[in-house]
Structures are given as structure tokens and as C-alpha cells.
Length: 115
Image 1 (cartoon, rainbow, N blue to C red):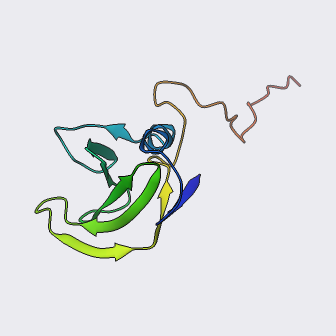
Image 2 (tube, rainbow, N blue to C red):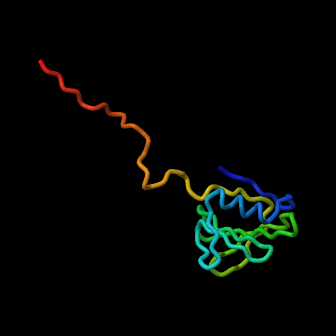
């Protein structure tokens, strides 16, 4: 599942945050690591799960996405401005590790025959 955002798009910051949580990203203001996002005023910083050394800052003005740019999550150094970004689901699977798989084995159980 992916959603595309473009500069100038009409979307509220609250709706954007809701969309991120639906894509399984977690809000964390203290520890900015892959798969998390943080909110600072009108800016939402997203550290995509598939990137190691780049994060994205989405700047809002009212209900408009004013700008998108990359930055280094370690130093905060600004990178290139972007016209649009695709947000992908944080995890590739939605199954819970503690739940047994519903897939059945392709092997059939051995049968005994008496002669």
C-alpha cells in the first residue's frame, strides 16, 4: 500500500498524521529512527523504513502541503527539495508474529495401509 503526496496538495496536517499511523508508522518525538515520524509545529518529519540515511520533512501551511525536502536525520542537514513523495507501508507483512500461520502445509500426512 502506498500513498502519494505532492507539493501544493490540499491535506491537513492531522489527516497526514492519521494516514501515517494507518501505514504503521509510529509517532516518537524522542527517538527518530526508521519507521517513525515526529511532529514539530507545522512540520512532520518522516524516517521511511526503507531508507537508511535520509528522511523527509513535510511542511504545512494551513491545509496545504507547502514543501517537501530530504534531510540527514543525524545532522539535520537539508538535502534536495522534492515535488512529490510516495509513502509506503512501514512493514511488508501484516501478520502478527505470535499468531500461527493460516497456511496449510503442501505435504499430505502420511497414511498407513494395512496389507
